Length: 507
Image (cartoon, rainbow, N blue to C red; front, side, top):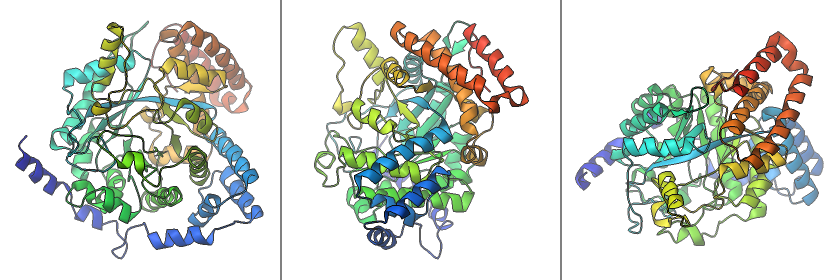
């Protein structure tokens, strides 16, 4: 595509009217001076007050900004340990002991933006550019399915060649891939996307092909930093176009949305407050907050000095704290910890309330089939920094991560039932806040874990998994909730069907 056509497309992307409708007296929902003032006023919070805030979160009530600011300013180690324990308890009450898995699929690294921290930025001459064809999408999806995954997040750079029409086609293509199983087939049952902000008309295109969650990261809520790392002659340089991307998605009928910030661009406490204010504004306009919140730390990227030298890079101790505060502040939302982090770091923060993660992750465009080719050639498959957006900290297989979680009493879930049963938007939010959705998810986690053990698990993982399944089924049989309305009988019948080879059975 000629550069002049790309520039013309870029000039037409932003629709000012689709920003202005959400402003209040011309202002957006991020008031920097207010956030800074709240953090300053919360210094050295009273212990009794902090415990009151923790107790509120344990009732699955979203915290107010002043309450979150108080948690962010805690310095007492004993209180932090109480908060860590509370984070895990909140997660258990809302989501039980399950961890949902997904696989990212990078479809294109073409990009018109020039973000200082990103390997995809257009000035990065080290990056090898590529956009997958639909046949390559099928091959990549097949490789992901053959690992055992059922849920995928497709990722795209911002470029006219990978805009809404291409995104819609890739979603349809991924859903169409069927891999034969014992009885029936395995497939990707839910396709989420991480893509650039779009207009309402374009968002309707991807809604019609069955998008799951629409994920957009603000990157940083701090305006001066946002301007410094996103040049103002680029589409991404428009702070408010990005800030209201998820509002437009809700207007377009996509009722499952996900927020996130890239930690390491600015002060982590400010970014946590920004994420909270984002959740509050979504609640104010649409009655529901984000289904998930992501909090990736910046890792080295090709052609980016900032990704290695930022003064705001977040250490491990502070990272655990920020995840804990997010868990307590927005107790109903899922928290996603990704393979950017090391295996040790993931083990640690899962214990403060994370609900989703990835494994067998390859973030180079075409990385899954390239990995298979590397295995066939019996050579080491190292990360190729010039073909991906950033570097990973944990490249373990899905089987290894599933086994580790099972050894720690956590069940892997590949469930996508809620979305296909209509439990999305305000429906799922009500169930999450009432600690009901997690109970249905427990049943579906057992069903999908049974599938995984039979179809994909190594003998070592299957042995550990069978023991965990017996514990889970014993708990289900003992809980009064499952004895209502014949639910236990339905589950028992379905479990027998899955054990007998039937696939994609859900409640």
